[in-house]
Image 1 (cartoon, rainbow, N blue to C red):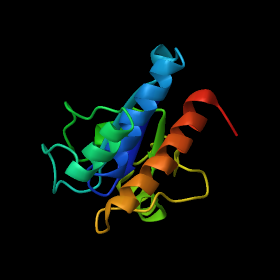
Image 2 (image 1 turned 180 degrees about the vertical axis):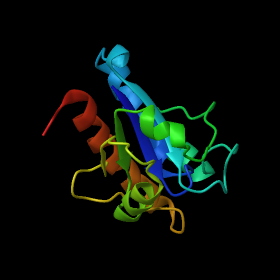
Image 3 (image 1 turned 90 degrees about the horizontal axis):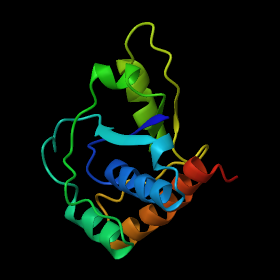
Length: 146
């Protein structure tokens, strides 16, 4: 299953989701069943590493973003993935407006009915809360938990 995580800039939430999901899959012996990637709806941070606060929050929990580089979503991402998971409802609306004609790849919220709040303009506590939510969501995706 090819899963793409998407947020506004591929700078905070989606890189963390990608790293956490990969680690959860590896620990569960399910790496071969999944291919995780992430992208942003803007090109503002394209080529940059993730937000330093995201990198720090991930490292504090054992997830490595050392090789990660931000990128903007492309048309190929719609056809090249089996599922696109957005971090908030605004992301879904923007993804739907960019969806190529005829594409049917499911686009859903990462947490089902809940959004992952963007911690960008807040402090460290927002990044910790982001990580809590992402760890829960990644576990549900990989392990099929309720």
